[in-house]
Image: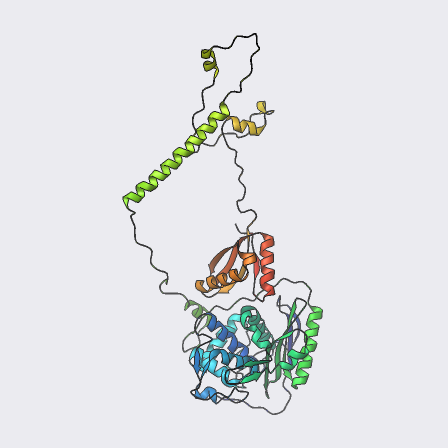
Length: 481
């Protein structure tokens, strides 16, 4: 491994400003020039750490044994010792807040076994995120030949961190934090404390790179991300980032549709050699389904079958009796009082005048009539009366959804289990807006979409607004057929 040093010459300058909600570029200067990213690299180290935790590869509470290589990394460092055991959550805090190089290397080795294997995973993830001009060689960002990125790619990574892992994003705004063996201070604390709305993300510095920073700030519902490569000093870098953030807030619209960046296809490891993206995707296919086999054939006891049949027959008989009683009530003649001079009708005549009751309708549907509406000759008769007289029910085919043909999408995941888990957690967190919605996982060639369906357009819009206000990704979908 060859680390490169450089003299005191000024590092090349590059900058990028975007509206984080839509991804729209608001300003760019040398944004695609490949430069040394320095500790901005740790954003990818942390992105993969969050991904590994979310997918069960490792737990925040797991203890990591520090290797000699990790302990020997130059400053900035936490001060880890070879053989020391420390929880992953403390390594993450040290890498994010103090920008500790020893912690970053320990994270990479804990997840992939070696820093070289971790760097390959970093590059696979970068390509999947659309970071087309980035190449990682290590987990910390110390200057190394071929370890390069761009302002555009690092801005893309900062936006992905915010939208894909909002539950961890707050770590970047902590001015101090407990890293297990020490209380550490944020390398970005001056901007965090001086710029209103600033809440992250990551600083970086080497002599070859200059002073780098990816910063995010929120004001009045707008979120702007600004990136600077090659600042001359921390003060000059912070001043330039503040200027770029101001420019972003001025140029960005008040209201804009949120376009959540697509998640990379989750691949835990592609093996010892670099693998192209299609092969990595193919490796996620399961050789056998983890679902339990279908239940073998089952014949219920004869007593249960007979009891069920008897219950059905009784229900049918009861329903037919009720229909027959209603039919007789409808056809009963209305008595007309006869004049006093007329003799009372004979009992036989009365019996002969009473119309015979209609046949009891069965539960078997009749064939559809040629015409439901009455003929033109009977146009003066209201349609409802005609329907009553012939004993038919006129049914209009209306949607049973009550307008609930909308839904929301809360992300794409690498497995069905993961999508279902996030749906359940989200439903519990937003029970006020999602309690009537149905959870649905839709598989595509890009992963598993986590959707809530069966909502009105207003309910879907409200749910998305609430989720986005809490930092979660959400897009409305519909109408659903």
